Image (tube, rainbow, N blue to C red):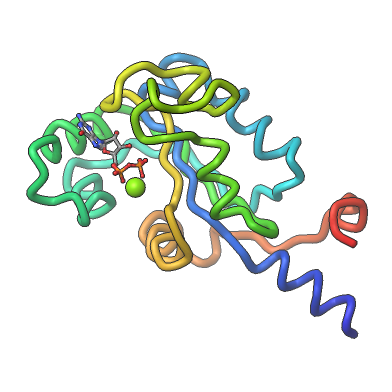
Length: 160
Ligand code: GDP
Ligand code: MG
């Protein structure tokens, strides 16, 4: 039906969100997850991973050659990361709004980086910056069978 198609359009937008090693160490997992959850987004995949240096280089492939690349990939591979896929209408763009600017001191209060971080090299969280990167990052971090499709009773209270 038309209604089902509309709902699945909302469900089909997905983004990759990762709580970096500093966010895990600083005890910010639950706070970050709560923001996405309370907004109404749906968690469709989650795992704790300790990425290798090689994997971190793959994730940040577009930044290869930047002066901070080695430090950044050392950092991402320095401890456990919470890797997630969140689903819902506008989740890619809104996820970036939740996260705030790359440099935490330029992030607004109320954003994750604005509220919890100070320096650009320890900015707590990663989020895909567009539909293409979301697709690539989800495929890099998750096998298809690790991503679940399911209905929530609250879906009808979130979408018209
Ligand atoms: P993001 O999409 O907001 O995470 O920012 P980018 O994709 O531009 O960069 C990826 C990550 O690299 C950022 O989250 C920062 O942790 C780090 N980074 C970006 N620019 C700099 C920089 O100028 N210096 C340092 N030390 N790290 C940076
Ligand atoms: Mg980025």
